[in-house]
Image 1 (cartoon, rainbow, N blue to C red):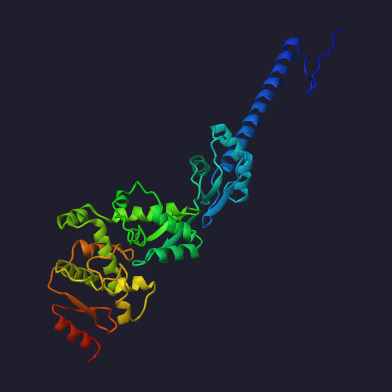
Image 2: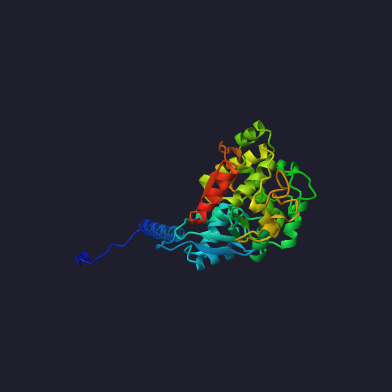
Amino acid sequence: MKQAKNNREDYVPPQSPKQRVRRRARRMIGMFFGLCFLFVCAVGAAGLYVYSQLQPVEAKGEQEKLVTIPSGSSVRQIGNILEQQGLIKNGRLFGYYVQYKGWGEQLQAGDYRFVPGATIDELVKSMRDGEVIVNTVHFTIPEGWNVDQIAASLAEKSLVDKQTFLKEVQEGNFPEYPFVADIPKNKDRKYRLEGYLFPETYEMEKGATEHEIIAKMLGQFQKEIKPEWLEALKQRNMKLDDAVNLASIVEREVTVDKERPIVAGVYFNRLHADWMLQADATVQFILGKQRDRITFDDLKIKNPYNTYVNKGLPPGPIANPGRASLAAVVSPQKHDYFFYVTKKDGSSEHFFSKTLEEHVAKDAKSRGK
């Protein structure tokens, strides 16, 4: 009797060994590609995370940040500092990135000024180039100050030791400025560099020496003295030191710039006529402080700087003249004036006269007589 066929719908015919092997292989391949997909997704996610963590932080309108990188800091430590300051997102990834780029040994310690929102490459470049903040100080030398006033002011600001500064003015070696060697050696001259410490606002590195500060002022003086000025003085057979000397008197005598060339012309007229300069400012220099009035006894003081008792220029400048006074001596106004007197009307301007009689009359006028 024949066996009946199995007509059940869920019947699965037995598989041959080859079929079982193929099926197992297909499963392994599926698992492999599944793992690959998961791996690629994981790598992509990790890459996206790393990429995002290496992007600049959002600036949010923040100002610059002062950051100190201590000497001997490792790349990891630098990354932590930058992360704490809110300049990067991830200090550890910063370290890996810097090491990968081969910059680990190039980062320099110091104080930096970083801007939030800067890229890691920009931050690293600043540290590789050593763009550290130099602590600086500013000070201003007004026009017409003399060496004593400059020394006192700088000492008061704790920028110099006064005695060291004055000694450097007298004895310092400044071969880079040839005009210093041309300054006459005159025993009656109070300060060798008087007149050459140019009035200006200066920026110096904190801790600069007295020599460096003086050299900065001399360097500014050299910049101000134009070649055409030197040529003009040469044409008049006038030495630079004499021009500085006369300019210092003009600086102390005149307040209104437009009058400086006129007053310079007055003094040239007196020099050419072999007159005494009779500049009150030279007497004030001797007295050592500014007085509202100079007495007749003051005018008689026996001192090489007193132009009321000595002909010609004093032994040296009485102050440090500014641009306008130097220019006035280089290009004085030509005229026949020999006298001038303050108007005394609050304008600080002067009446100019050709003769003594005219001068006396204008002096009386200035006094309201």
